[in-house]
Structures are given as structure tokens and as C-alpha cells.
Length: 398
Image (cartoon, rainbow, N blue to C red; front, side, top):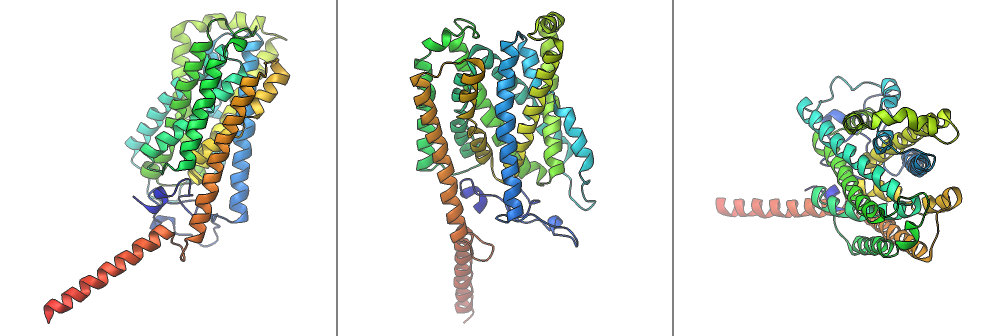
């Protein structure tokens, strides 16, 4: 296991193109006239901040528009599912504008790449369906708070799949987020009286949100391991390809479900009965699709540059924003229990951020040339072992 996998939330590579195991590959040597983004540089941090803003804005607006679809008369769960991945063909535009892969770059096996697309895409399709049902059955403020548990689930999947450390701060965050979700589950009576939420569906919506959060955490970890073990390249072109094709598979799952369920027959009547007309119906769905794709691309870019945990932390920053906007736009009730749960969830988020800060300082202080403290210790150990072996060999010769 390389040193990059032993440091929680540590960036796995200094250059933008790097092998997944943390070792520089010869195919990624910089060429004359090309500029590489270096970790810690101003330009590198600017790209990270831009990706974070895209995730925050896309996730917040996408969630609010998805709830607006239901509040304005939308009833199709499969249409709501499709809006979360249906905007993926738009990614073909920036994909065509990115430079092609260099001729000398080693391409991953086609069978493995297809397996990544299909496997993650199918998971995304069912995850989107669970989120669509959950958002119908819960007020958007409650939904966003319960969905924050994906951060706790991601800690577990990152430990199992990505071999990242489970520190005391992360354990604290997991416990706090779990209690925040449990608190919302106990205090469900006020939300069930909301006129925009189906009666008697709160418990089902709560369970579906937890299941979708766990599934999404698994998807993020699988994205990370796919870039490290299969694709082994971290270019913008690969980010767009992986995002587009996995979402196309998820869209296919949604289309099959739409026709198999028979909901497609109700769409003309749903559009005609939509509040403020057909144009608003189309604009709401298009806006939702664009926002979710923007957030998804930003998330994958953060996974490639940082880690799945860091990307999930960024998405959780929107946690305090969605409930506030939901109270203003949809009239959701901000009860005392929700306020306490929101504060607990924010505390869990701060624990993750502080862990990242500590790891960053440790990595910076432990550098010796280009090596971190773990690599330096390993190098010293190897040299000591080599010296003892050489001495034993000379003694035996004498």
C-alpha cells in the first residue's frame, strides 16, 4: 500500500496526470511547452475552489428545483430520476473541446473501462431512483439533513475500498451525523403534517434517503478506485468521459423504468396540469438536469484531484444552505429538532475539515524533497537493511 493511501484525505498526486498507486509513471513526463498543475500552487488551488463552488451551487439549486417539480404538480418518480443523469449528453460539448489523449499514453483495457461504466452507471441509476422517492416523501429541509449521513457512509467505504485511515475525528463525525439523522427520525411528527408531503410516507422516505446516501458513498469510493486502478490517468478528458458514460448508463436505467412502469402515459397530462404552464415544466426539468450534471462533474474532478472523502465533504457544505432556502421558498418548518440536527451535522462536517487540515500539515512538515514522512522512513529503513546485508556479505567473504 503506498504512502498516499495511508494519509487520510491527502492528495494522491502532485501532477494532474498520475498513476493511481501514487508512483509517477514514465508516460506522464512533462513535455516541452506544457504546464502541469502542482499541488499547493495558486493555480491548483484556484481550480479546486472552482470545483467546490460548482459542487455547492449545482447541488443546492438541483435539490431545490427537484422539490419544486413535485410542489408544482409533478408526480413521476422516474422523470425525477432521469433529471439527475439525463443531462449527460451535454458533456459531449466540453469533451470535444478537450485535447485528445497523447499517442504514447497507455490506454486501459476496454473491457475494464466498460465494466466501470456499466457497474457504476447501474448503481447511479438506482441511487437516483431512491433519491427521487425520498425527495417526494420528505420535506426538502429534512431530506438534505438526512442525506448528510452519506459523509459517514463514505468514511466506511473509503476505509474498506480505498484503505484510508479512520481517525478519532472521523469517528466523531460519524457518530455525530448518525445521531443527527436519528434525531430527525424521532421528531417526524411536524414534517408529516406538511401539505406538500404525502401522509404516512415519512418513515419510508427516511429509510430511502439513508439507503441512497449509503449507495452514493459507495459510488464515490468506486469512482476513486476506478481512476487509481483502472484508468490510471487524471486528465480532464477522462473525467468527462467517465462522468458522461456512467450517467448515460444511469439514464438508460431511468428510461427502462419509465416505460416499464407505464408512467410515460401520464406525462402529457402532468405537463398540462403543471403550475404556470408547460414552459415552466420544461425549464424546471432542464434546469434540474443541468445543475445535477454540473455538480457531478465537479464532484468527480474533486475525487481525481483530492479524494472521495474530500468531494463528499464539499457537498456537505451545502447542508446549512438547503434547509434555509427551503424555509424561504417552500414554507418548510424549521423546528427546534431540525435546528439541533443541522448544528450537529455542521459539527460533523467541521470534524472532517479539521482532519484534512491536520493531514495537510503533517504531509507538509514531513516532506524530505518530494517524499512524505512515511516514504522517508521507508527509504531510511531500506538503506539500513541494505547496509546490514552488505556488511554480512563482506563478513562471510572474509
